[in-house]
Image (cartoon, rainbow, N blue to C red; front, side):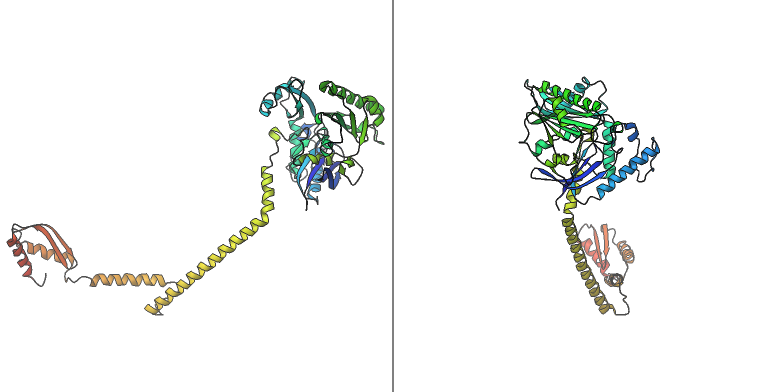
Length: 486
């Protein structure tokens, strides 16, 4: 079965979980689920969400610094997400997460180089000069999006609090997935260019209008170079019986989009030729009047095969994990939160090789068992042969099964002892022979000098010095006179 890509859009409610497949430039949704999880990825108040321990296996099992009701809500939502992922029927191999836009900030800076090492050295200082808050607590992602006419390089910078990213990844880990791509909604809006590069003009704007979240991304010279997030009033203050907010806030969003458009055209000295809009939270005519640009409504279904008509970004996000496609404008799997797929890929590879490894292991075990049986049979045959030989030699009654070797050893020791007794032809022991020899030498000690006497078995060897052959003959005659001893 073909595997898909797990893509989760948590930027709006209800949260969307889809498993998508990319086929010939179009995303096909193989499976889709919706969950109402308003607080799980909510990072606006990190002091609340980060105080909850997601490692607890039961609701309320952790000691939290936050209100127990809020903690229970988070654990309940986590359980729903984990259960939904576990019950997916379509296999998937990678994942994408689109997070809410709270505290997301983006900007573009110019640098005289595009080397990653040099950029990392100066990026934090460059950004700090442009923002009124300390950036050391923010996760900074950058992307070289193009070269300027003056030879400098255009660097897109996206920022999110590290505490928010830490909370998001804790949720992902507890839910059972590790996203390769984590981005805000505006970072995904370049997907239509990946899917239909020849359809759009070189300079265009893409707007995702899903009240209360409005995301915009700008394409200059065919590349997505800049994005912004605009949020309207909280959902609780909006009209509840329609898709559009009140006229006052409607104008506020349009004004933000107009200022952003003017800033982009001034920076790049290019005119945005057309504006493309996903979603139905902005009136097309009002948007066209304010921006003074042609506006075309885009349906997600033009790029993603959907079962329903309700648009979402989850399907578009899947395109960025395909090999050969361009990168998303922002991916917060960087720095200390970098995506490290080595162990995961190793696990996937081992799982794919499991049938072959099992077969190899089975063959090795069979070989070992076969060799063991052969050697056991040989040892058994050898024992039987030894037993029969010993019994034939020593008799049936003297040998019990299993004691053959000990019986042989005792018999061999007895034979060796008897051979030692009968191996010498001398009638005297060594000490007796030495005594007799010493006494007999007293008779001839003036004739010769003795240096060494060696007595071995039935032979006596005497080494010394004699003045002449007559002395030697005298010694020989003295020993010959006692034939009973020598």
